[in-house]
Length: 485
Length: 100
Image (cartoon, rainbow over all chains, first blue to last red):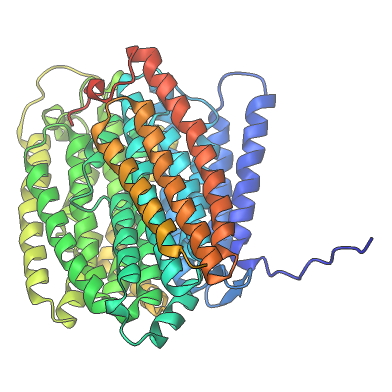
C-alpha cells in the first residue's frame, strides 16, 4: 500500500488558534483530574496563556501568509482583530473569578469555554473562505450560548442562554442560506474567488441569486453584531448572562462579527459596494437611534449598557457604511477602544452588585463617589469615554468613524451620528449624577476589589486614556490593517 | 443537471416553513426543530448547487453544517434542560423573567 503523502501546509496563520485550543483542552483535563472545588487558579493559567498568545500573535505583524489553499490568511487585519479578542478575553477572565465566586458558580469549565470562544472569533477574523468563517462563527456562538447560561441555578441566566441559543441558531440559518446562494452564483466559497467571479460578471447587481445571497449574509451578521432591527435579543441576553460574560460578549464577539462582515463585503463584493453601502447607511441610523432612545428609559444598569452597546454597534456601522480606508480603520480602532471602556464599566457594575444581582439599577450608584472616590472616578472615565467626550478613546474612535463617512460623502450620516452621540450623554451622565450628587439610600458594604479586578480596571482605564491622548500610535496600526486589498 | 430550479424551489419552501415555524411556535423544542429544518433546507441547496456546478465545495460545506448542527443540538438541549429544571416548562411565552 502506498504511503499517503501529506502536502506541506504552512500552519502559521492558525498557530494562535492551535495553541489556544491546546491550552483550553489542557485546562479541561486539569479541571477534571485535580482534586478540590476551588478552581480559581485555572483563571490565572488562562490569563497567562492569553497574554503569551497575544505576544505571539502580535509578533507576526507585517508577515503575510495565506495557507490551506487560501482558506486562512495571516494579515494585519486579522492580527489587529485577534489582539482585540485576546484583550477582551483576558480582561473578562480577570473579572470572572470574583463574580463567579460570589454567585457560587465558579466551575472550572468557564475558562476553557472563554478560550474556545476566542478560537472561533480568531477563525472568523483570519478566514478567507466562507466555510472557515462559518465554522469560526459557530465555534464562537456555541461556546457563547453556554457562557450566557453558565449560572445554571439562576433562572435569568438560563433564560438568557436559551434565548441567545434560539435566536442565534435562527440567525445562523439566514447566514448559511446566504452563503449557499453566493456559492451558487459564483461557484466558489473562497472570498477572493468570489470577487474574481464578480469582476467577470457583466452586471452583478442584476444577478438575483447573488443579491439574495449577499442580503441574507448581511442579515445573519446584523444579528451577530446586534444591529437594529435584529437587536431584540441583546438586552435580555446581556441582562441575564453573568456580568463578566456580558462584558466579554459585548466586546469580543461583536468585533468578530464586524471582522468577518468587513472581510466578506469589502473583499468579495466591491462590485456591489453602492448597494451594501446604502443598506448599512440605513442600518447604522436605525441601530444608533433605537439603541440610544431605548437606553434613555432603562434603570437596570446592565440593560442600559446593553442598549448602549447596540448604539455603539451603530456608530461602528457608520464607518462600515463608508467602506473606505478611514472608515474601516475607524471600525478597528473603535472596537479596540470599546473593549477597554465597556469591559471597564462592567467591572464596576460587578463591584456594585450584590449576590444574585438583586440590585443593579442606576439608583444603586447613589453616593458611590463618597464611599469609593477612586472607583467612582474610574467609572466616570469609562462613562465619559462611552459618551465620546475628549480626551478619551471613545471620542477619537467616533472622530475617525465619522470622518470616514464624511470622506465618502455621507455627511448626513455623520450628522445623525453626532446627534445620537449627544443624546447618549444623558444616560451616561445620569449614572454620574447618582454617583456624585445623591446620598446613599441605605448602608451597604461595597464589595472589596480583588487583585485581578484591580488589574483589569487599571488596564481598561489606561487603555481608555492612552488611546484618547496619543491615538496616532495605535491608529497607524489600524490604518495599515485597513488596507485590505 | 436539468432540474436545478426544482431543487432550489423545494429548499426555498422548506426554508420558509422553518422560518415561519420559528416565528409562530411556542415550544422551544419545536422552534429548535424548525431551525434544523432551515439548516437542512440550506444543505439541500448546497448539494443541488454542488452537483450543478460540478465542484465539491458545496458538499464539503454540508458536512460542516451537519457537524455544527449536532454540536448546537447538544448545547441547546442542555440549555433547555437547565431551564426546565428551574421553571418546569420550555414554553417561550414563559421566558419572562427578563423583560422582552
